[in-house]
Every structure is written in C-alpha cells, then in structure tokens.
Image (tube, rainbow, N blue to C red):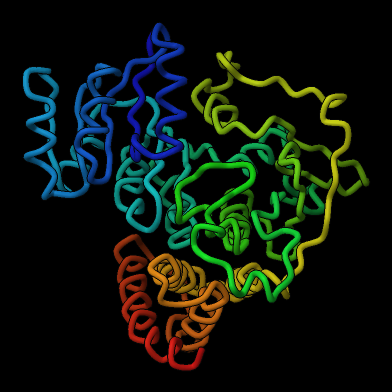
Length: 392
C-alpha cells in the first residue's frame, strides 16, 4: 500500500530533502500536492519529476508561468492562497509542512483541521499560535510529528516514557558561524558572513536566525508546546559537531539522547516512516570513533542576546512569542538589506516586545488572531526601523 504525501514548501531545503526520500522509496509513496513560493520553473520541474497530482504557488502573480511550465504534463495547478488551500485539501496520508515563516500558519493549520498526519517543519506555527494548534490537533484528531532535528531527537529519546518523569529537555546548537567570534567582531558582521552556516544549509533567513541563536529560541518555544514542558525545564547548549541533537534528562539522573549525522533526511525519514525505519541512500552513518570527541559549551547570551529575548517571551507567554517572531522577521530582512547592523536584530526585536508587553497578554485564540497580532507587530517594527538606524 502506497502512502500519499503532500509537500508544502517543496522547493525549499526541507522540501528538497523530503522529495529526495520520496523518490528513493517510490514504491512506498506517491506525491499528492507540491506547493512552492514563487519559483514556477523549480516547482514545475519537481512536479514533473515526482509525478505530483497537483501543484500550487503561493505567489498568485506566478500562476501564468507555472501553467506554462506545466503545459502538456496533465498536472492541475494554480497560484495564490486559494490554490495553496486546494493543495492542502487534497487527499494525503502525510502533509509535510515546510513553508518558512508566519506564511506557513494558514496552510499548516488547514491540514491540521482535516485531521491529517502533519510532519511539522514550520516552527512558526507553534511559536505564533501554539496553544491554538495543539488544541485543534486534539480537537480534529490530527497527529503532529516534529521534523526539526532537535525535536525529532527529543521525541525519539523520550520514547514511551511519560513527560512527568522528565526533569528537563535540552536542545543543541552548533553555535553558528560566530561561535568563536568576539562581540565586537560579531557587531560588524555582514549578512553573507551571518548566512555562512558551518553545518546546515537552510536558506538565508534561517541561517541568520541560527547565527543569532534566535533559531534556538524559537525551538525552545516549539518544544514547550510539543512536549508540554514549562520554560524552566527547557534548555539549550552549544555542540559544534551537530551530532547530538537533543537530550532528555530523567528524574532518576539518567539521560537519553538522540544522535545522528547532520542530515535533515534523518528526521524526515523518521516522520515519513510512521513507525518504520526507512533506508537513506547516500546517507552518512554515524561513526563515533571517527568523530573522535563530542564537545559542549554553555550559550553566551551576552554575545547572542536573541536567545535571552526568546526565553523571556516563552516565560511571559500570551502573545509575546507571536510578537517576537514578527519583529524578528522584519529585523532579519532589514539586516539582509544592509539597513541595520547584526545586533540591530536583537535591538529591534526587544523594543517591539517591550512595546507590546502590556497590549497582548493572552495567547491568540486562533490562527486569524495570531496573524492579526503578527501584522500589527510587523507594522510597528517597520516604523521603528528609522529610529533604530538613527540611534545606531
């Protein structure tokens, strides 16, 4: 029996890793819908190769180009929000939710409302609307499987052990390109330097989040919702080799950990297997003797203040994570454009969080409420940018 898999964010790094696995196991899977952002040629090529049943682009203006690129293929296609939601509504056993940023909330939630098994790589869904997502997953009988290597490792390390027996969970960070840099050198970093991740290739925005360690902050918030642990039972540690991805500390002093080579196909395969293990062609088996040593370091929140800010948002709860994520997306885009310095990212995010701290105290009740808060925080952050540039 073949399982049908739809891939949201099919042309991104997670999407490409997913379709690589689907192609390797073509006898086990068929591809339902593939969804991309605006690259018509890339999506059309992928849809043809994977014999997808439907293709959609989020950018409505790219619709004619997609239709032309798929002419003669017999693959139905469309563009714009309605086409993306049509893609999600098509029959699928597993929906891989890999759209980056807050743009992934609506399609991911639509899959959840249909009771699908959702392999979740869009961490912003839980950062921006975690309470609503977890509530609705239970309400509609959906299953959320973590694709992020850290959360997938935690899920495997947890096994069938009850969360009540867990003292804490720790996710690891490679430390990014600035792990050994001084604060002064980091302050002068360019976008190209920040995006030069030593281990992963995840797209420019996510790579910069990794350089600032905001990515770890988002992942701590995600872990809070996935595993139901409070902020005081979640931690992050720097592990440059990126072999240990997550650790579960038990009440009796034992620790279980999830280890694998840094290859996103490993956690994706775990999700696609639905309890069975898939082989990975061209995968690199973990050889601890060859690795030699595994090292760990505490996070320096003076050099990486974004993690401190994210911890505070998790502690404050309510809509604080929603506001923080919106401000970070605005700040990172401004940094990429050269409008602010690297530490301007943390400055803008912190100012935005402080501004909204007394305004949105409760968590968004649904996705629409989360997106409304997101839009409000983005607008304020964008207006604050000139003042930040003038001050810095």
